[in-house]
Length: 258
Image (cartoon, rainbow, N blue to C red):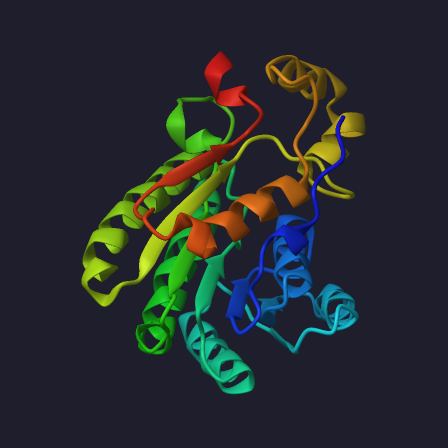
């Protein structure tokens, strides 16, 4: 595996970035990458310990940081957090909606978790961030979707359907906000492995599923959180200034194999 380039390739000095769901895994890497690229960062999540750990790591880069606990299934909590973040950072230029309720089960609880966190948290955070984004000269929203949205599967039908809805929302939101010069895009990760993440656990808990999934990735390995973070930084950067309404698959070709 070749070395992963540094996020220093991007320059986000002067940007104020909010990452909803930014304390661990992909969200943590997104937040750290923006911090390393010079942005001021606010993150939220439910877990206070991991939240503070990530905030400390961001601060070590010299970035201005803000972190607050927030249940992203709670609309009132989201409204309060976005205002806290905007006040702390002095505005919002980039909103990253990364949280997931991991609603894989085809049960009422599974569907509700996905609807409230994967979809409605993105809708609500966008709504409350909009006044601040309208005041930004380089406003952008990036949602975290999944390649599960693009094909049927017997595992996680609720998760796939909700992510498909998020992709559709991305296109509609992009069209609605284009007159405000606010770009809206999404990244759709493939199977990503990070410590104590889903695929890290499945390596030991479901080794046959782990091997089957790995065999479907043409590059012969699972993706990394850093690779998703760099795609997010690209979509939020001036290099993607003429890109909106798109969902970018970041999967090492996994989707190509069905």
